[in-house]
Image (cartoon, rainbow, N blue to C red; front, top):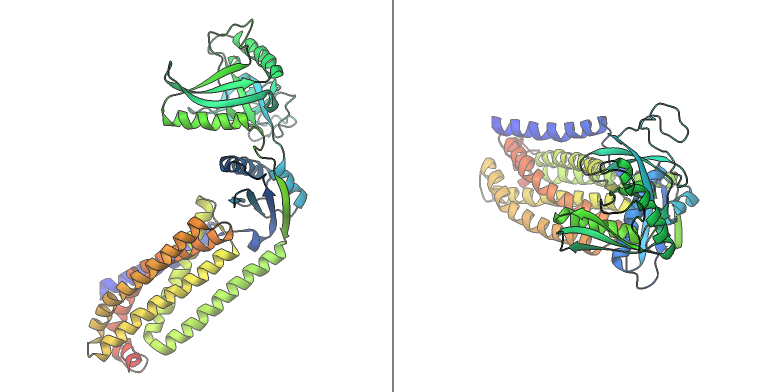
Length: 470
């Protein structure tokens, strides 16, 4: 008895306390476009576009959108064969949203002038125009001017001082990742246009004039103000001719990481801008007021449904209804906490479809209590004592719970795998709720019903467990 009571108290404390802690630390669920308001842009690619190019385009868009600010967890997904849907919660400026996802972007090759270890540039706090006082990095990249950019070299963070761009993306004809059998390393083979070949020869000749180990022997490849890589010029390159002929090789290293790095770099070099010529098919704006109304309606619907379920459970199962009400509150608080943590850790956004999934999962949880309580009533009518009816009823009912929830979970997994857009949010909410329902049944419901069975509420009147079985 004592162990069960302690177990119930711990479960309740963890559930309710966890929600209070999440709210205190600001780990509330991140709201999607339809609950917060914002802008949705539908982009259509030409028929027959390679799916790989669409994925590359979404990655580039994500990086760009992160820089426009005021966007809480953008949702960019490929829909169908040639459509990309971009949802920008919190952004109500349609033109700004379209520019963020549709701008051309810029790939450039720039000479490295200096390297400063760490994440802070030497101009931090100097008040220099276009330099962030806190980080010392360039605020708005200008291809015609010197700039300070952060670079993760693989061995640590560095701040690179870069000269004006010498080549741009249009000077790259092709780039292919390959494994060099002679040196047993992964590399990117680079082909340049006629004009690009001359510019590249001049750039590499200048870099080759500096000694080995000098940072000025490196050339940075920059995409949209982000340093992709900064390889050094090979010692065999002459400072008089540079790398001529319109082709070059960027050596990266060995192993699977180098293979992936070579593949990614080749894609960046081939498609410095968006690799697909998208057409803006539709722009949909959702006001913050409409989003708030949707959220309020969803919350009210959920609370009313929970209230009605609680009343029915109390009328039908008397004291066992109290177990169900507390259990549903535990289920709801843990679910909210989970979505808050998912929003913080992996950027999951809760949409109106997700709220629907939560409400459906609450219904599934209510069904779980009904299945269990009916088994208890069945055992009591067969003459079993309340304590044994509670224990045996759960053992028998759990098989039904497990079967029913497995079907729901499989449905959620299939929805997530086959559907797109908001339906995925519904599937995730339903799947998490289904798993949590079984966990709550095991750690709380069984213990709470067992504790109740050993008190006066087990067999002490019409509101007791026995009273519900009459």
